[in-house]
Structures are given as C-alpha cells and as structure tokens.
Image 1 (cartoon, one colour):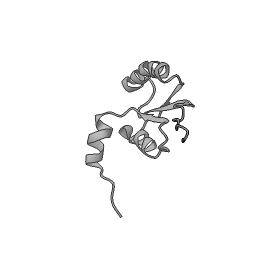
Image 2 (cartoon, helix red, strand yellow):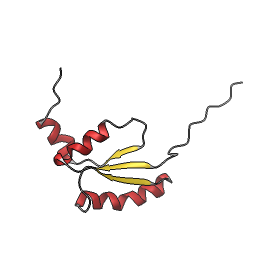
Image 3 (cartoon, one colour):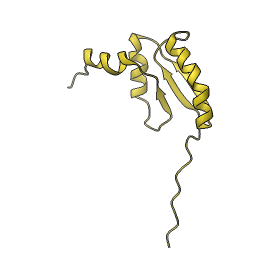
Length: 93
C-alpha cells in the first residue's frame, strides 16, 4: 500500500508585504496595522517593504516580477489594480 503524501509546511520563512507607497502614508499605516495580525495568523514574520514611486507602479511591478512562491504579498489599491493598467497597457512586441 502506498504511503500517504503530506503537504509541505507553509510558510517556513518570513513573508514580504510590498506597500507601493512611502512610509507614513495611509497605505503604509494600514499595512503596519494588519501585518502583526497576519503574522500571528501565519505564525511567521511579515516584513513590510515600502517601494514608493510612479503612483504605486514601482511596487506593483516589483510584486509582478517576484518569484511565484507564495511569499510575496502586494497591498494594491484601485489605481494600481484598475486605473493604471487601463491607462498604460503593456505594449506587445
């Protein structure tokens, strides 16, 4: 009889929360309020990483380019999720 398969433990290292705005703003404050609660829930440290600039596009691009391993979280908002992509669609070559 085959042995049962077990899922890998997750998370096994700190999670990265990308905030696409500078420290001290409302989005940063929101991230720093939810980070400890998320850390308790995940039983792992949450590292808040502020990447300001270009109306949040720099942080959004950083999150989009992150390794898809489930350890990067992006705190997006309407500008980066809907308005920005509609105004600046990627050009296809």
